Amino acid sequence: MLKNTFIAIAAATTLSTQTLASELILSIDQQPTAAVLDLNNTADPSTSKPQKNWSITYTPYIWAAGIKTTAELGGLPGMESDLAFKDVIDKADMAYMHNLEFRMGQWGLMNEIIYFDLSDSSEPDGKLVDKIEAGASEGIYDLAVTFNPKTSENTQFILGVRRVDVELVLDIQSLANNIGNKRSLDKTWDNLLIGMKQEVPIDANWKLGFKADYAGNLSDEDVFILTADANYTMNDLMDLRFGYRYASMHVASEEISIDQSAAGSFLGLAFNW
Image (cartoon, rainbow, N blue to C red; front, side, top):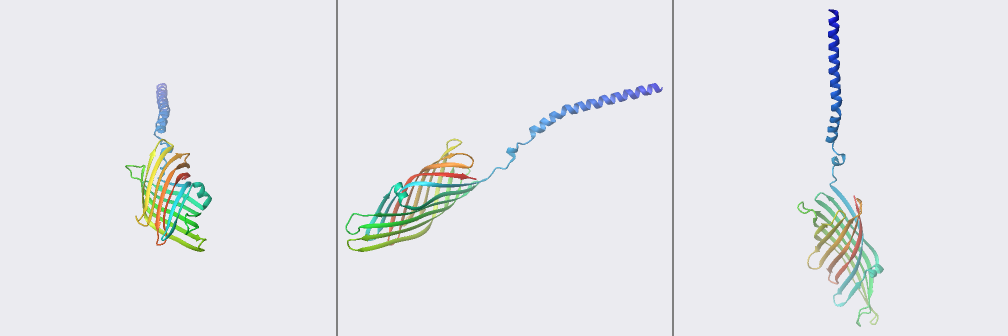
């Protein structure tokens, strides 16, 4: 009887041990599969990061422009000046130009500054005037909202304000008659700025751009700017921009009327954040 009891206990123990071993082996066999499944279901950290929805671009640039100016002096001989870029450099006292743009989604805020300070002189043909000396300080300051529609992400509409500050002094000298006459224009005005920019991507690094804008009142204050450029992405932080720009300005007062145009190539380095 006792012998049979020991045999039963041994058999039960053996069966229990075999069952435990089988469950252990099955558990070990399933663990790699579970690990693989868990690994496959793990999200890629790079894709889980939130995408940046804003950007800032600051572009200082050099504009190699020639400048043509015609100044009418109400009753007195006017002055015409045609300066090539090398002459502009020679006669420039100061110049600064930049474009700054902040973008968030479809909307953005744009600021552009074009400023130069020049001095020039001429000796017109005629007996009344021997020499005209001129000093000019001009600044164009743009502040505008930009919008890129979802249906055309490469098209940008521009709406804002353009401030133009013009200071011109003309010193007219007649040595024969021993007379001198100074005329000056100091005028600042603000006008509604409207414009449009179209970009054409070429590949991952290159894209072309075309921009036109206008601000004025169609009478005595007008500024029109047309730009064509190419943009090359050097890395995540810098782009190289170059192209051609044309600008025209008309401003008039009771004493002086000025028509001016500037055209030439430009080169800038864009810093991106």
